[in-house]
Length: 197
Image (cartoon, rainbow, N blue to C red; front, side, top):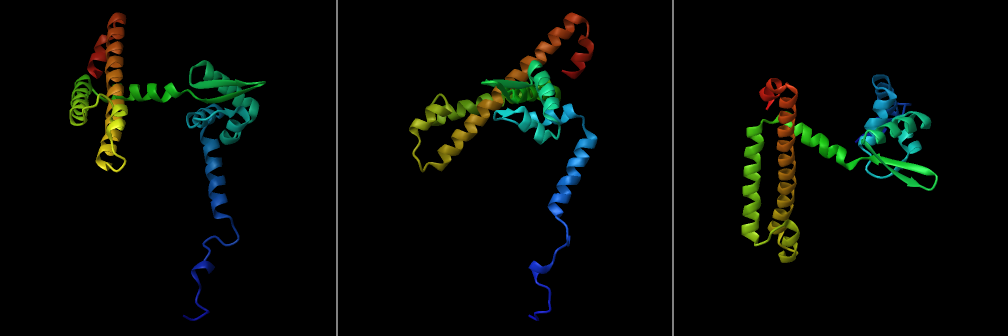
């Protein structure tokens, strides 16, 4: 190859610029322009599973610390944030129940009563199949009988845990849907709710 030919390492699509930094800066400007400070704090909190200070969350949300603290306190009062007192400081993280509640509401909104009942029936059947196949009453009990190299067994344990979790969500969504219906009937809103059931 002729040395005058360009090498791959010589080709720079953005000469003289930090392309990644420019993209990040543009995305940040766009995010700030399209959202309020509260929305950014709430969005950052929604991805915060470990305890963080208001200043750490403020930095990620691109707001001042007092603004972040004000919104975090409001989110904690509404149940969206959990708090942890450490000496003279308060740490925050998303309330673990927040995602669970949102998932239950989503399932109740997106599926009819009949669909939820069918899914529950199918998942209960699958759980029973796991119990019968392995002679265990739970995925945790199954661990005691599995050999380290039993890949199929370990895969089934994971599937069993997932099925059990999804079953719990589906049952809760069905109960939530029923609660909505009963509540609506007692307040005279039952026609609208029945159409969405």
